[in-house]
Length: 184
Image 1 (cartoon, one colour):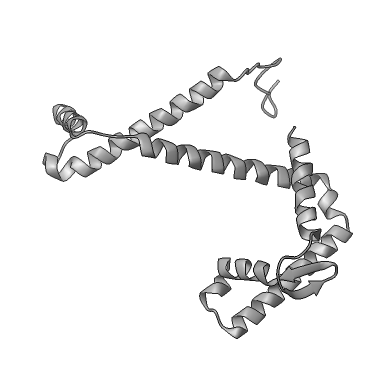
Image 2 (cartoon, helix red, strand yellow; image 1 turned 30 degrees about the vertical axis):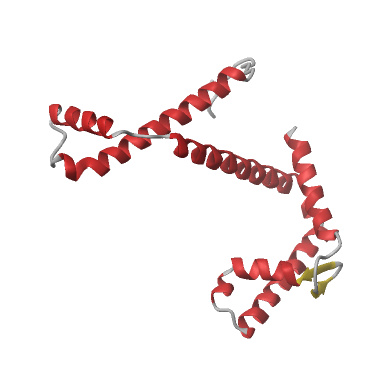
């Protein structure tokens, strides 16, 4: 499944590069065209975008051209078809998707977590009993509330992951834990 996702991702990338340009063309590098829109997006996201001058724009365009030249050379040499490259794309795809999913879940959970003043007071009193409160309640309120929010968020994330485990068919096959190098 992941192999097909990597191939699809590479195909979409290649199609995106070879598709009709959108907007004014600033430069042609082989069969690749750098559009004004692409330039502006890349420029604003770069360190060069902090100092928007004609010189910084010219320098950045030259950098974009050099980048495209290197990429075209790499494609000519078939580097984009190597197992190592495809594995790197697969890892990037997985990491990006994982980050996106976790960010969304964190935002969802953050919007649902609530800590009452009563909970903060009870936590403070428990800290007093354990001699862990070294300041008055008013001075520790924000710190305790923050800790309780983090605990609830962590618990909600753990519960979500437990639900995923429960609701997805997971079957361990054979010796589930591979042996360490040098282990007999």
